[in-house]
Length: 153
Image (cartoon, rainbow, N blue to C red; front, top):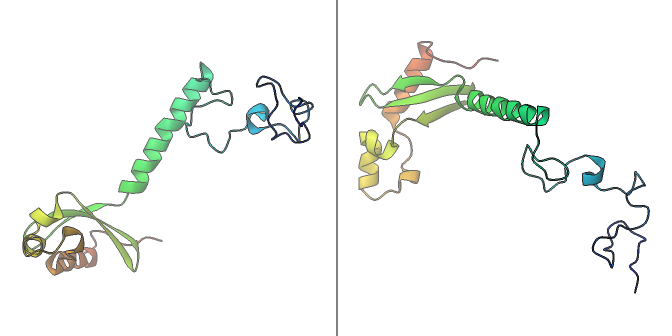
């Protein structure tokens, strides 16, 4: 029995066999054969053959990973400014992303470091639904008004 070789996606009867013309025809070659990464590839340092890169390729892969880490750190932390609550001194990191959007990054556990949120959690409100502390919100608004941070276009 022979395999149907009319499509490059049809399996050959012999597991080691290649459908005729698949490797020589540029249009029918797979991403791995053409040197492009396959949709399932997840490793940034994987080569088309699946081998680990060496020499210059390994150095380039490490440089890309290092730059990716630096870019991610910059994206996540750039512009964050510490702001302390005037009522309880709990400190959060704040960034103004747009006139309507302010990001707040808690440095400590919000449900234990903020007395207002701790009281809500103690009364049975889940921490994820405890809402916002108005005292902290006022402190952030004051810090923004005083020029500690702001939205830059």
